[in-house]
Picture 1: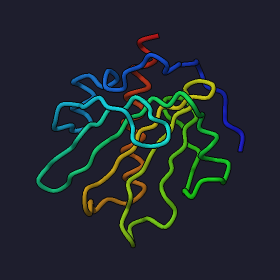
Picture 2: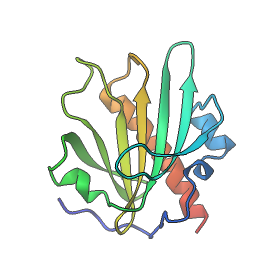
Picture 3: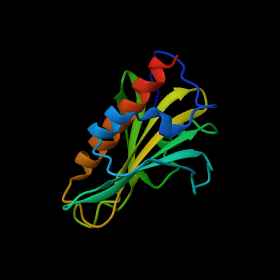
Length: 159
């Protein structure tokens, strides 16, 4: 699947993911705790920001990773055990993906949106629920797209 060209290159090499979410962005995402900078525990070992949402009804976290070792094409080549769909975030090609075999009937595993920001790089925004959310898979993906859009807008304004 061909990935559309990006409007502008936004390298992530020196980006701290938590810096992409000012107080206004945190309010839009209903973040309820101070963002936490960390290193991702996956194969990428990327700079990551954890943003928590805790309410009476629902608990979940966003994990925003600045991946500098792989582009979004890896999610589209059919080699991963995910459901993947090409989408657009702030004019940038992106992929919504989630593990195959998950969904509303057997428990959503959240959603991730990976944005093509530079050659061999992706801004990956994942949402992981704690327990049942009552949200559809599409709603969870809309949430990661919104968080990704806020992060990309910040990246664009900083360039």
